[in-house]
Image (cartoon, rainbow, N blue to C red; front, top):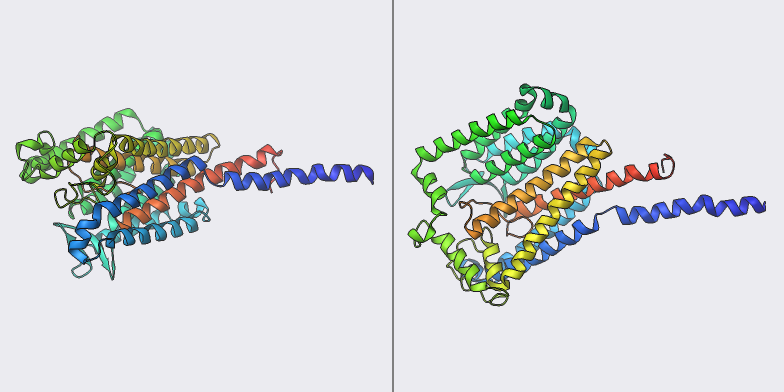
Length: 400
């Protein structure tokens, strides 16, 4: 009896430690801190950057701030739900999701349903909200391609057919996006897909041939349209026409110059006062640099870099534990967040042509915010499943 009493705590103790470990490992703390900091800073900057335009358009200075707060609330609510959905379910839904993407892109062109803003037909009008289809297409593409690479890794590595087969679907998506037009979304989807396939082991020769083909097509598109050529070349010297084609970029560069090291103070931006178009969306980072300075701008860049590095690390851990679908989902989300942030920051700083891409987790926009919160939740789910896979092994392979 005494021997059983002394052994009982030893049998119970591992389970108590396991439950405690589960609470610690269910979420990646570093990733969460970076995401929360970007959400909070973005919310503050949307409120600061949008007061003037909100007052003029709606009569309420904090109109966009309250809407952004609501979008974050919806995004976090859906993210919380996604955390409890096993990734195997998303894998089974992959083909349906990519077909849904095609359907949504077609619905944009239906009169009365699609909504045109600034010459682009990118939104589906649903009562009080507008659904930007391209944001969902990016996420659905990652989930579909992760499943494809899981099932056909050998074909992707060994044959051109296996490499090109999923790109046929992406070509259809690209055509529909170019008709809107949404060149930024096409670039993000294409580069994310290439990055995932590269990590899936596709051959270098296939990449080179595809890149040459796409580059040639882009050159042709630019040459046949003076408007596209102007947008591609304006960023090289925006001061050549600072009041027309170079207006956005020159105003953004002025904002960076005024901010110096520590900024002019929160709410003190001059460029947001109808000088800088889309101050609370595409050019939010320029307003941030003006009001909070270079130090905070570098902090934001560092936070995005941290998210990307954590995503790649989570994907690598999943790959080492022979969980390929989870690995490709993590890789895809990391590449997507990093690429879109890089393009937006590059546009703001004048090193890339102007594109209509929001800054993830920060810029104003319901579709972008909700989808990005869901993507982060998927990344956290991958991390959880990887650690759940590890814990039985640490206790001699017994499931609990």
